[in-house]
Length: 381
Image (cartoon, rainbow, N blue to C red):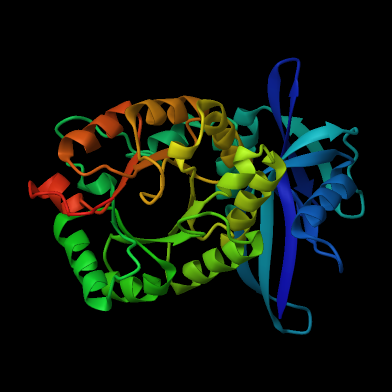
């Protein structure tokens, strides 16, 4: 038996100060507003309705945060698979009013106080949800930040190996199983962060790399970005089911060029929601086709839609990664998003330039050349 619920971390800014909403439930525990989905509702509608009913606050969804899954036993002793979708929600209007039959109280707290209350009297399953919300709001607790040795998006420094910053890539249509097997062997040998492949190869890569540190990345809507949004969402969900832990999707470039920003944001958000927190989502802009104004807008839309990375190019479009684009993208997103340089990065010098310009990851088919001192792959990207 499956049960879906939704809720959120609600915040507001009052007199220039950030405040976080926490609930005290009838058991005395600190928690977040959430509740069961009703027939005919979307997950987003459920989250906003439950927040309004439980706390009196109407809000708007800023970004998805996390999906918490667990199992419990119902009153009739049936096993229930519970799935709770959490969103970051900005308060729009209303006054705090606890739904007395459901909760004991609700209040606004400073970010520091909300984290303390969660740690001292909250549910363990909510800790990562609240922490991710605080990160996105730019107020991650110092002790949480200190516990992440390299940070979510490590920064390369000269003298460091570049291998852990490389997505070892093979996306050619003519790639065969023996080529993918070689890609996986090279990733293990050189210590690359991931292999990046088309969706049909994800399961094979997962099998080849099981039990290792090398991750599997799948492209979605590649290389044009012009597939139907629902097709991209399905493709992303299928890749995660097959074993991908990262998704590199191409945004709808034509929609961006015609400045249909709502369509672009919906496209990205659909993929983010489809993976349900099971994978990082990187958004490919095809920067060579865009003026700077639209590159900045694409950064804004990517962050608003809840994705994790902005990425320059497919390697199959007009132009590739440039230092100028990496700097522009790094300046246009918050520290909570990573930047990936891809397209034409074929030498150690080029990779170092991208990393120093602000990239957190490099996508290339020339990873062996970059870290092993060999000639770049012919026709690489």
